[in-house]
Length: 210
Image (cartoon, rainbow, N blue to C red; front, side, top):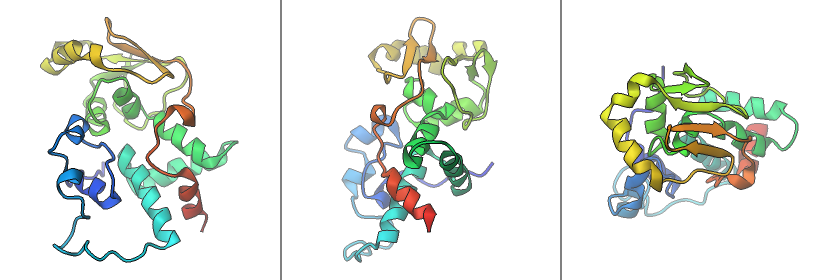
């Protein structure tokens, strides 16, 4: 399966802001955006940046959404088309579909420090959806779904450490977490107001409308 394999900090620098792709590291002085705020590339190339066109701004917003949720272009465009077919505002539908991804929900429940780490947990079969092992990060959750851990995974050092740290983590209002049993539940589908989006959905719609 195709995936991005280069340093994710480059994506934040290219976007010009923190996308929090590396979890706790993004809140420390080690964050690449704080250390090197200029875009990646040849030294000095970012000193004189040309004015970005409207098309360029739309592309930037689309790329920020892709980078945030860790999807490649083909998969992201497919998600956009699904959002476009739904009733309502396409930009908001897109955000909700991205939030409903299983890897994102695992991240939102605090089972992982980043979406990249959450995606790895799902792909390696550590996560169960409604009692069944699901290794597809893009699987969409729905209201009432439960997300937990495979029995064998509860014996890993990662899980034992997570149990100790989970008390300090908070979850969004559309999710609930049983910290004692380490099982999360989707209480309702997320709303745009409940999600702190780092991108402009309207700009993404305009990008694909050309």
